[in-house]
Length: 253
Image 1 (cartoon, rainbow, N blue to C red):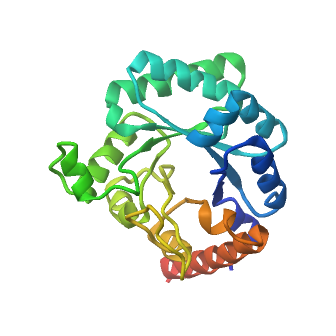
Image 2 (spheres, helix red, strand yellow):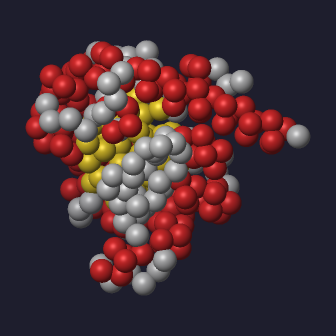
Protein backbone atom coordinates (compact mmCIF):
# COMPACT_ATOMS: atom_id res chain seq x y z
CA UNK A 1 0.00 0.00 0.00
CA UNK A 2 1.15 3.56 -0.75
CA UNK A 3 2.74 5.10 2.33
CA UNK A 4 0.65 7.45 4.41
CA UNK A 5 3.25 10.19 3.92
CA UNK A 6 3.10 9.89 0.13
CA UNK A 7 -0.68 10.02 0.26
CA UNK A 8 -0.51 13.08 2.49
CA UNK A 9 1.49 14.96 -0.13
CA UNK A 10 -1.47 14.66 -2.49
CA UNK A 11 -3.96 16.33 -0.14
CA UNK A 12 -4.48 20.09 -0.36
CA UNK A 13 -6.94 21.43 2.21
CA UNK A 14 -8.87 24.52 1.13
CA UNK A 15 -8.82 27.21 3.81
CA UNK A 16 -12.11 28.74 2.74
CA UNK A 17 -12.50 30.71 5.97
CA UNK A 18 -12.91 34.45 6.57
CA UNK A 19 -9.92 35.30 8.74
CA UNK A 20 -6.45 34.49 10.03
CA UNK A 21 -7.68 33.11 13.35
CA UNK A 22 -9.83 30.41 11.76
CA UNK A 23 -7.16 29.61 9.17
CA UNK A 24 -4.42 29.18 11.77
CA UNK A 25 -6.68 26.96 13.87
CA UNK A 26 -7.34 24.71 10.88
CA UNK A 27 -3.66 24.52 9.93
CA UNK A 28 -2.75 23.57 13.48
CA UNK A 29 -5.41 20.85 13.55
CA UNK A 30 -4.31 19.46 10.18
CA UNK A 31 -0.54 19.93 10.32
CA UNK A 32 0.15 16.20 10.31
CA UNK A 33 -2.50 15.32 7.75
CA UNK A 34 -2.51 17.90 4.95
CA UNK A 35 0.28 18.09 2.42
CA UNK A 36 -0.57 21.69 1.59
CA UNK A 37 -3.15 24.39 2.24
CA UNK A 38 -5.03 26.47 -0.30
CA UNK A 39 -5.46 30.18 0.30
CA UNK A 40 -8.18 31.43 -1.99
CA UNK A 41 -9.86 34.70 -2.78
CA UNK A 42 -11.84 35.04 0.46
CA UNK A 43 -8.91 34.57 2.84
CA UNK A 44 -6.45 36.44 0.61
CA UNK A 45 -8.82 39.42 0.37
CA UNK A 46 -9.37 39.37 4.11
CA UNK A 47 -5.79 38.91 5.32
CA UNK A 48 -3.60 39.76 2.35
CA UNK A 49 -0.09 38.82 1.31
CA UNK A 50 1.20 39.21 4.87
CA UNK A 51 -0.77 36.16 5.94
CA UNK A 52 0.57 34.15 3.01
CA UNK A 53 4.10 35.00 4.14
CA UNK A 54 3.23 34.06 7.71
CA UNK A 55 1.86 30.67 6.65
CA UNK A 56 4.93 29.96 4.50
CA UNK A 57 7.24 30.99 7.36
CA UNK A 58 5.38 28.58 9.65
CA UNK A 59 6.45 25.75 7.37
CA UNK A 60 3.26 25.16 5.41
CA UNK A 61 3.14 24.50 1.68
CA UNK A 62 0.75 27.09 0.26
CA UNK A 63 -1.29 26.90 -2.91
CA UNK A 64 -2.25 30.50 -3.72
CA UNK A 65 -5.56 30.13 -5.53
CA UNK A 66 -6.34 33.60 -6.87
CA UNK A 67 -6.62 32.64 -10.55
CA UNK A 68 -4.77 35.50 -12.23
CA UNK A 69 -6.47 36.68 -15.42
CA UNK A 70 -5.45 40.04 -16.88
CA UNK A 71 -3.23 41.52 -19.57
CA UNK A 72 0.10 39.64 -19.91
CA UNK A 73 2.28 42.30 -18.29
CA UNK A 74 0.04 42.59 -15.23
CA UNK A 75 -0.19 38.83 -14.72
CA UNK A 76 3.57 38.41 -15.17
CA UNK A 77 4.30 41.00 -12.48
CA UNK A 78 1.73 39.53 -10.11
CA UNK A 79 3.12 36.05 -10.71
CA UNK A 80 6.62 37.23 -9.78
CA UNK A 81 5.27 38.64 -6.51
CA UNK A 82 3.57 35.31 -5.78
CA UNK A 83 6.92 33.58 -6.23
CA UNK A 84 8.55 36.06 -3.87
CA UNK A 85 5.94 35.23 -1.24
CA UNK A 86 7.37 31.71 -1.22
CA UNK A 87 4.21 29.91 -2.27
CA UNK A 88 4.49 26.31 -3.40
CA UNK A 89 1.88 26.66 -6.14
CA UNK A 90 -0.29 29.32 -7.76
CA UNK A 91 -2.66 29.45 -10.68
CA UNK A 92 -3.91 31.56 -13.57
CA UNK A 93 -6.83 31.20 -15.95
CA UNK A 94 -5.74 29.33 -19.07
CA UNK A 95 -8.45 31.23 -20.95
CA UNK A 96 -6.19 34.27 -20.60
CA UNK A 97 -4.30 32.85 -23.56
CA UNK A 98 -0.83 31.89 -24.68
CA UNK A 99 0.90 35.26 -24.29
CA UNK A 100 -0.41 35.76 -20.77
CA UNK A 101 0.60 32.32 -19.53
CA UNK A 102 3.99 32.25 -21.24
CA UNK A 103 4.88 35.76 -20.08
CA UNK A 104 4.09 34.80 -16.49
CA UNK A 105 6.01 31.53 -16.62
CA UNK A 106 9.07 33.14 -18.20
CA UNK A 107 9.06 36.05 -15.74
CA UNK A 108 8.77 33.77 -12.71
CA UNK A 109 11.56 31.45 -13.80
CA UNK A 110 13.86 34.34 -14.69
CA UNK A 111 13.23 36.05 -11.34
CA UNK A 112 13.68 32.86 -9.33
CA UNK A 113 16.95 32.16 -11.12
CA UNK A 114 18.27 35.68 -10.45
CA UNK A 115 17.10 35.85 -6.83
CA UNK A 116 17.87 32.29 -5.81
CA UNK A 117 14.22 31.41 -5.15
CA UNK A 118 12.59 28.02 -5.49
CA UNK A 119 10.23 28.27 -8.48
CA UNK A 120 6.61 27.61 -7.53
CA UNK A 121 4.42 25.24 -9.47
CA UNK A 122 2.41 27.25 -12.01
CA UNK A 123 -0.87 25.77 -13.15
CA UNK A 124 -3.60 26.82 -15.56
CA UNK A 125 -7.27 26.76 -14.62
CA UNK A 126 -9.35 25.07 -17.31
CA UNK A 127 -13.12 25.04 -16.61
CA UNK A 128 -14.33 25.68 -13.06
CA UNK A 129 -15.91 22.67 -11.38
CA UNK A 130 -19.03 24.73 -10.71
CA UNK A 131 -19.52 25.17 -14.47
CA UNK A 132 -21.32 22.97 -16.97
CA UNK A 133 -22.20 23.23 -20.65
CA UNK A 134 -25.03 25.65 -19.93
CA UNK A 135 -22.49 27.93 -18.23
CA UNK A 136 -20.23 27.76 -21.26
CA UNK A 137 -23.10 28.62 -23.61
CA UNK A 138 -24.06 31.62 -21.46
CA UNK A 139 -20.58 33.03 -22.10
CA UNK A 140 -20.61 32.33 -25.83
CA UNK A 141 -18.57 29.11 -25.81
CA UNK A 142 -20.07 26.43 -28.05
CA UNK A 143 -17.69 23.63 -27.06
CA UNK A 144 -18.76 20.94 -24.64
CA UNK A 145 -16.94 20.79 -21.30
CA UNK A 146 -14.55 17.97 -22.25
CA UNK A 147 -13.43 19.68 -25.46
CA UNK A 148 -13.00 23.03 -23.72
CA UNK A 149 -10.96 21.52 -20.88
CA UNK A 150 -8.75 19.61 -23.29
CA UNK A 151 -8.10 22.66 -25.49
CA UNK A 152 -7.08 24.75 -22.47
CA UNK A 153 -4.97 21.95 -20.96
CA UNK A 154 -3.04 21.49 -24.21
CA UNK A 155 -2.49 25.25 -24.46
CA UNK A 156 -1.25 25.32 -20.86
CA UNK A 157 1.25 22.55 -21.59
CA UNK A 158 2.51 24.34 -24.71
CA UNK A 159 3.12 27.48 -22.64
CA UNK A 160 5.43 25.58 -20.30
CA UNK A 161 3.29 25.62 -17.17
CA UNK A 162 3.54 22.75 -14.71
CA UNK A 163 -0.03 21.53 -14.95
CA UNK A 164 -3.70 22.35 -14.79
CA UNK A 165 -6.68 22.60 -12.50
CA UNK A 166 -9.45 20.42 -13.86
CA UNK A 167 -12.38 18.43 -12.57
CA UNK A 168 -11.66 14.73 -11.93
CA UNK A 169 -14.11 13.89 -14.71
CA UNK A 170 -11.63 15.24 -17.29
CA UNK A 171 -8.45 13.77 -15.82
CA UNK A 172 -8.30 10.74 -18.10
CA UNK A 173 -8.73 12.72 -21.32
CA UNK A 174 -5.96 15.09 -20.24
CA UNK A 175 -3.65 12.18 -19.40
CA UNK A 176 -4.34 10.55 -22.76
CA UNK A 177 -3.66 13.73 -24.72
CA UNK A 178 -0.69 15.22 -22.84
CA UNK A 179 2.22 12.83 -22.55
CA UNK A 180 4.47 14.97 -20.37
CA UNK A 181 5.18 12.79 -17.30
CA UNK A 182 5.75 15.91 -15.19
CA UNK A 183 2.44 17.53 -16.15
CA UNK A 184 0.39 17.69 -12.96
CA UNK A 185 -3.38 17.65 -12.58
CA UNK A 186 -4.89 19.38 -9.55
CA UNK A 187 -8.49 18.42 -8.95
CA UNK A 188 -11.10 20.25 -6.88
CA UNK A 189 -14.68 19.00 -6.77
CA UNK A 190 -13.77 16.08 -4.51
CA UNK A 191 -16.60 14.71 -2.40
CA UNK A 192 -16.28 11.56 -0.24
CA UNK A 193 -19.07 8.98 -0.41
CA UNK A 194 -22.24 10.30 1.15
CA UNK A 195 -21.16 13.93 0.87
CA UNK A 196 -23.11 16.71 -0.79
CA UNK A 197 -22.18 18.40 -4.06
CA UNK A 198 -22.67 21.91 -2.60
CA UNK A 199 -22.12 24.34 -5.51
CA UNK A 200 -20.02 21.92 -7.56
CA UNK A 201 -21.32 20.40 -10.81
CA UNK A 202 -18.56 17.92 -11.73
CA UNK A 203 -17.48 15.91 -8.68
CA UNK A 204 -15.88 12.58 -7.80
CA UNK A 205 -14.75 10.68 -4.73
CA UNK A 206 -11.08 10.86 -3.58
CA UNK A 207 -10.21 7.27 -4.51
CA UNK A 208 -11.85 7.51 -7.94
CA UNK A 209 -10.03 10.79 -8.66
CA UNK A 210 -6.67 9.26 -7.79
CA UNK A 211 -7.48 6.19 -9.89
CA UNK A 212 -8.31 8.50 -12.80
CA UNK A 213 -4.84 10.07 -12.57
CA UNK A 214 -5.14 13.14 -10.34
CA UNK A 215 -1.88 14.24 -8.73
CA UNK A 216 -3.35 16.52 -6.07
CA UNK A 217 -6.82 16.70 -4.53
CA UNK A 218 -8.19 20.02 -3.28
CA UNK A 219 -10.72 19.34 -0.54
CA UNK A 220 -12.43 21.98 1.56
CA UNK A 221 -15.87 21.56 3.07
CA UNK A 222 -15.79 17.77 3.63
CA UNK A 223 -12.84 18.38 5.98
CA UNK A 224 -13.37 21.93 7.19
CA UNK A 225 -17.02 21.36 8.11
CA UNK A 226 -16.28 18.14 9.99
CA UNK A 227 -16.49 18.00 13.79
CA UNK A 228 -13.11 16.20 13.73
CA UNK A 229 -11.11 17.68 10.88
CA UNK A 230 -8.04 15.52 11.43
CA UNK A 231 -10.05 12.30 11.34
CA UNK A 232 -11.92 13.43 8.23
CA UNK A 233 -8.57 14.06 6.55
CA UNK A 234 -7.21 10.69 7.72
CA UNK A 235 -10.17 8.84 6.22
CA UNK A 236 -9.54 10.56 2.89
CA UNK A 237 -5.85 9.68 3.10
CA UNK A 238 -6.71 6.03 3.71
CA UNK A 239 -8.87 6.09 0.59
CA UNK A 240 -6.02 7.68 -1.40
CA UNK A 241 -3.68 4.91 -0.19
CA UNK A 242 -6.08 2.21 -1.30
CA UNK A 243 -6.64 3.81 -4.71
CA UNK A 244 -2.93 4.34 -5.37
CA UNK A 245 -2.17 0.76 -4.43
CA UNK A 246 -4.85 -0.51 -6.82
CA UNK A 247 -3.60 1.80 -9.61
CA UNK A 248 0.02 0.72 -9.10
CA UNK A 249 -0.95 -2.94 -9.14
CA UNK A 250 -2.90 -2.51 -12.36
CA UNK A 251 -0.04 -0.69 -14.10
CA UNK A 252 2.45 -3.40 -13.10
CA UNK A 253 0.30 -6.34 -14.17
